[in-house]
Figure (spheres, rainbow, N blue to C red):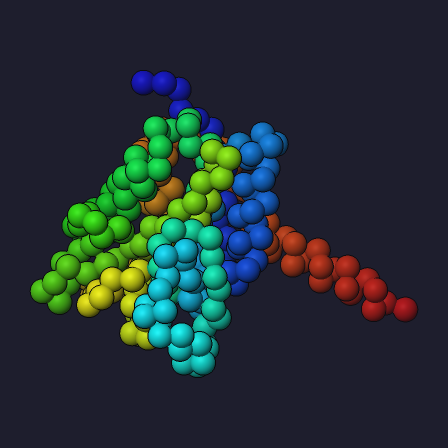
Length: 246
């Protein structure tokens, strides 16, 4: 087996607005394309947001912009594949920023590897996750039906990945009722907490995802990178405070 690739693991410490995380993703991707940084896995939770992927159709959300805003969520068009979905606190989102050729032959194999990471993570908590033909993401049995527990939507620019996956842990599932999730009609959405009938720590899930990701992609994590968004906010606060001083 070839030597593991070294990678950076960034875990953000509190729910992040989508726009802030998107700016960070783009920065990391540009640094990777320019070979200024190595591969990175960014793990976080979002503040409530609906994201509309490139294949979103009007029927997937009926252009109900006002109704979606009334849930307390923002609305964001994004460049990933797939249709509309929802992100919020209690859902672990992973954004791998990788030079794809170091790990697999192309996008289809990459998606299979992301699916494997999620299946392994669920198995650690005794949940049987599986794939369904022509229905991207990871599914489990819930409410006597196939239920989606994780979504995947990616993009690759100049050979470097962006966007990624979202795993429902303790997520409030009610916002999904306003949309056709991922463009799949009659799609049941569930979470790890609902399947297990018990709450789970998102930090523990992030740790397990990091382990499964390293195993699947033959990586080892370097020292954990401090939360760059928290540091940026602290720097802005200190700068503003300094300006207010007489």
